[in-house]
Image (tube, rainbow, N blue to C red; front, side, top):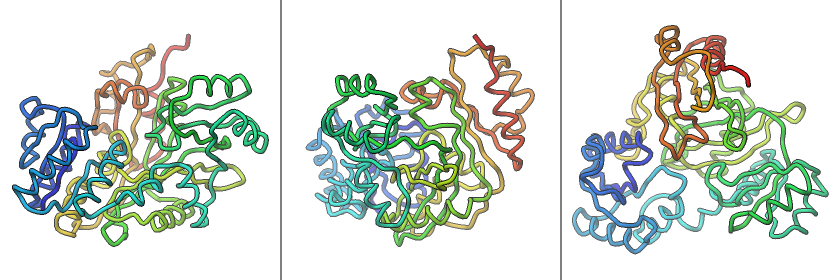
Length: 388
């Protein structure tokens, strides 16, 4: 198998997908804008060959890279990055080189929030009201139906980038004065706890792995209000979340892909779908999969792609939690104190790259316990800080 992997060095821990794909017998053919000699040793070792491009937004350069690999190794079987930002590029390359996977005719349905809503509705999954608005008049008409607050964000955005809560007319006018280019979708504000249904499906759409997470708040609030973030996995997936999650996997025709599907759990209205992401959950969640279930999801994905066999079964033994810290806060407990007290629960401590720090904090603690009460205790200890 020949797999072209776009940007194998970013995010930094994703080289593990490449490493396991190579170990499964595939030719892992990296393409990136970093020079090969500048890549960390673990990335260089994870690829069979590497092709440098000056600008990864230069589509012709990516085509030349794929042409080179085709000449050298034969037909390209997969083109991947496992990164939401490159979904459109992946789809176009697959079309041009006749590669298995999502093609351009499906890309809008998994990138545009407005199209996602159509798919949710067709599957009978409750979804927040929303519409694409092109000007103030259209926005005011929508708000006349929903009332304030509303959420405004790019229809084809990545993550929570440029996502805002608007609480009144002044917020609305300011948003339209400063809004980024591109279509904007406006949604009714839904009050609830965010829960996600996450996992991996094989080429036939069958679930290879699934789990669920509960979030302290959305990434929008985390970024815009400089809050701490924490989220944790569940040992038992609530039946309604699992049922709707599996319905979404089928409706979005998820095949040989990770998925991250977000819902609001509301009081009185149950679960309301927020959006679907056809890639691994963000941050270090793939590592959390491993710690919660004592598995190697990187190896499972690689074996599924290269061999059609993800390997042995698994079970959710632990709750696994990510809790962030931000350097701006005066914390009550030092890092050393945290490790002295809870080191036996700690699985990983990460210094977060700057591009992710607004969402994931400057440092992240990943820990696990079979008891949710212990997860809550550790999270509160990590986040305790002096009030201004």
